[in-house]
Image 1 (cartoon, rainbow, N blue to C red):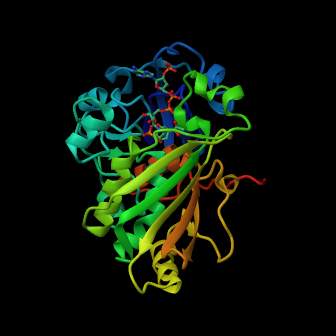
Image 2: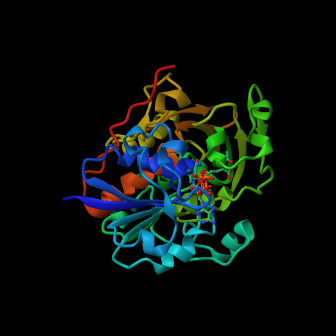
Image 3: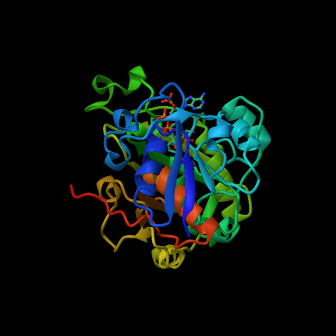
Length: 343
Ligand SMILES: NC(=O)C1=CN([C@@H]2O[C@H](COP(=O)(O)OP(=O)(O)OC[C@H]3O[C@@H](n4cnc5c(N)ncnc54)[C@H](OP(=O)(O)O)[C@@H]3O)[C@@H](O)[C@H]2O)C=CC1
Ligand SMILES: CC(=O)N[C@@H](CCC(=O)OP(=O)(O)O)C(=O)O
């Protein structure tokens, strides 16, 4: 079976990463590739690493150009995907890398994104409880944000097994600058970023806070509140998330390790590392894997979980392709046999 796929936002980081993965996918042919200001350009000028697709021309991102494919990936700025998605045929699998369809709470959407809520689609993080089943046969998929991917993978086993307290969750993440997209911004230029680290969105203001709270609250089946601080790190890609929460009285490190092992032992892309080894972003760079480690800090009664992903792969395009594979009944790992890189 060959699946025809269109990729919008193909000049950007997320769309480019979708193409990098699809170029090696055994069941896919790449149809239309579209952009906005770069429509009309050769892909090779904008994504020089995609050698096999270099001569392809970017078309305008229109419903007409995206129609007629089995699957459409939307890798567009927030707010741009909902209008296009609404006009694509109901039978097409539409996978939105943007935030438009992630949140269930319309008020939270309006507060953090400042526009009307477009609705909620099945969430493309199959490792969450029940989520793989929800993605089977899905025609619309919301790809999680990159920070929520790492944070939810880090803490979900603790909440779904009722091992953690819900009101004192602290998450600090460091991200490579590609997480901010390809458009030129002064805070992302080399002189600002190289050899320097700085937080942003401090004090509950980051739009991924409600997305993380939504996921953890579902895992616990009760409200979870989160303090989330993102940090810009001097690297091009990768996320290292450190998530901590108070454990419930009497919970031991052995119980914690057992819960995380049970959750991820059979997962092809999520790994609790052997005891004593801690995650590094480089070991997952360019791959769809997430690696994590945990410890119980007996002094404060907190579990510390550190999780590394590649923001563009497991955090966006890899997760998107993994979800597509599940939705279409393909092998879940198809096209995703990508390894990390050595230091
Ligand atoms: N970067 C990351 O780590 C992650 C990104 N995402 C999401 O993926 C989406 C794309 O992000 P990213 O690739 O980083 O961003 P980029 O800025 O790198 O790319 C944006 C893409 O959208 C196109 N575009 C810009 N404006 C419009 C418009 N008005 N209508 C249609 N297309 C438009 C651009 O085309 P052109 O270049 O031709 O102007 C470009 O192809 C976002 O929603 C983001 O939240 C999700 C998880 C992680
Ligand atoms: C470094 C950086 O700027 N990161 C982005 C998150 C990127 C991402 O995953 O999320 P979305 O899909 O929700 O855009 C940010 O903080 O907004």
